[in-house]
Length: 340
Image (cartoon, rainbow, N blue to C red; front, side, top):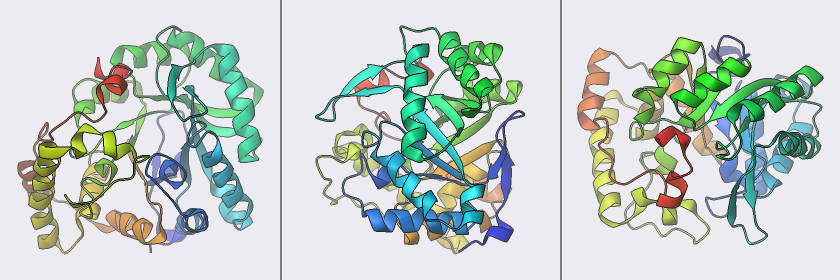
């Protein structure tokens, strides 16, 4: 596994901190991907910190707070030196029901501060390093939501402001309100919509991208098979890209990518992550590893060097817009300001 001393770093925008070149997305450790082993999840966070990963990403609505509690426990039980290097990236705003249902987003200033108070308590922290609303609240101007986070920055409860899944116009409005460190958005070989107008805008404004879904939620990891049965509480059981003909088409793309990976002597997952890393120093991929084994595979992407010929071959194997199916179900797509 990559060691702490050799971990590459990248800046989170012109105003944010330097972070490890790969971050750890912790959502799947408690929510949306079926059962996860708590002890293994904590061991995976510890292994990530030991390897030099500094950015831990979560949402206060992942498992209705249980993901933050998990991270809090992992940090408390980590060696002091590793704990001190960890940076937390937290999304807020999603409203949930006791049955796990989704009820929209709340970006009102009072709600922002309320969400933050609970997150700080669950994390056992005195501050959050990067704080962002998970989806734009259509009933609250982004200036008000970002302004509330800016007040938390002034008070010392938050270090930096982030955005999530918003489009170019919203990015500009937010950046005119307060300094923005990064935009969190899905970006992978099979999700490249960010390249049209969003990425040019963030680069113009000095805002980095923290890219989630870099393995397409496991679809392009090289480990997913057409006959895999997904639990009812697994997000992918309802995702268009994992259904019927869409799944078969998308797995054909993976096989084309596998040929290139094999020629380079690396796994499909590593070449897929390496492709995102190669998109620029302002891109920080978040890997959703839930086990130490998958974490080690993901970290190996840092050692994969893709030259111009490799990138051209990957582009030919998996062209932009090649994936079948939207990245979310219709109702969730409607909530994405980034898709408008």
